[in-house]
Image 1: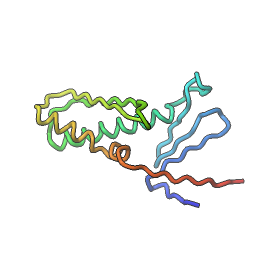
Image 2: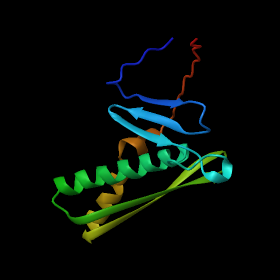
Image 3: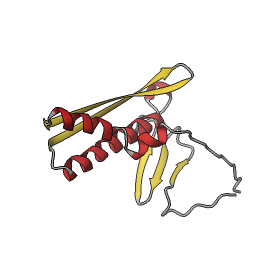
Image 4: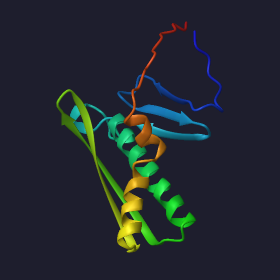
Amino acid sequence: MVSFRMEEKVAVATIGQEIYKTELVARTHTIVADEPLDVGGKDLGPRPGDFLRMSLASCTAITLRMYANRKNFDVQEIKVTVASIDVEGGTGFETLVEVKGKLDEQQHERMLQIAKLCPVHKVLTNPIKISTSLAMIS
């Protein structure tokens, strides 16, 4: 059986008997996932797939903000929109980055390159291996 330490890169999902409501814990943060009303949930939080899209969007935004700050670019706001789409043989993501500020063509191109270097983008564009085990608790 695998054992985890919470200081590692670990997330825990716990679901009881309340239909689809799932408590998620990462480090010291607790949030709720759920399913929409039309599939039997109570829409108390984002769907699991929403978290994946939010992860890519937030990672891209944070990475771009860090870069813009480090380079002293004139950027007031960065908005990242991520949609997942069905593609032949799997899932694709379409990402739109909107930057409010003044960037020249070279800065614009560099920001586009940096957007593709966020850690979540790297994870999603490289081979992923998932190992799953089941432990029965009485």
